[in-house]
Image (tube, rainbow, N blue to C red; front, top):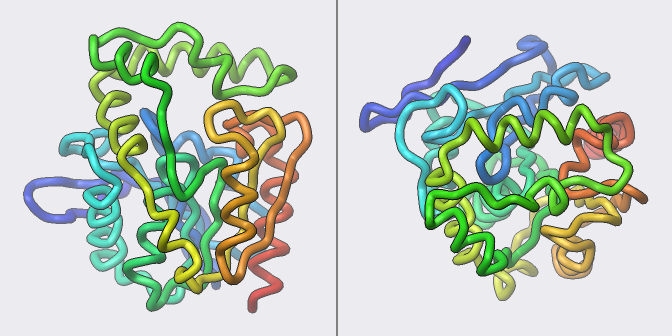
Length: 252
């Protein structure tokens, strides 16, 4: 398993497929997640080098979960610098989408485009969710919020198991970072091509969040997937993958 040293004793684990691909696409997961949330994108068609990172304190990475999007952004920037990524694409889901947006705002040089999956320019979190994780407990209705009504039962089972295996403190840190994130006033100045993807049944980051991004980012395209929930890249991966590939090819 590959790791990259980003300083201060922190090593980030990442998955890599098709290392010789002519285009590099780096995936960043959401709250309490890990690189496996992009497992259906690892075999994406097209000549694309796929990287999927575990954020600090997640998955196989060392370090601690951060409580601000800016801190995660800087960890990602350290990874990009350490791997000497040039002219790459960045994709993020939910919290990862906030990190991606903030990265594009601060470091647009060398970023060819961004894929924003189930995210927003502001990410308020339900107080009951935050309080439950603050008390070191698992929020019982989480699968309802993150999957659509017709999601594969296997995805729901895996989600429940993953939540039970992930310390509540990780979710609390990540949801705190989301709750404090707000770059609505800066959105129109982020001049990086963007593909925005959202499911019609997303209850955590409702489609209106993605519509705002589509309306305010200068170079944006919106893909709306009927029947999918917050984990749209798992629930409707074929549509997601095909659109990402065609969108990247259209920018070449």
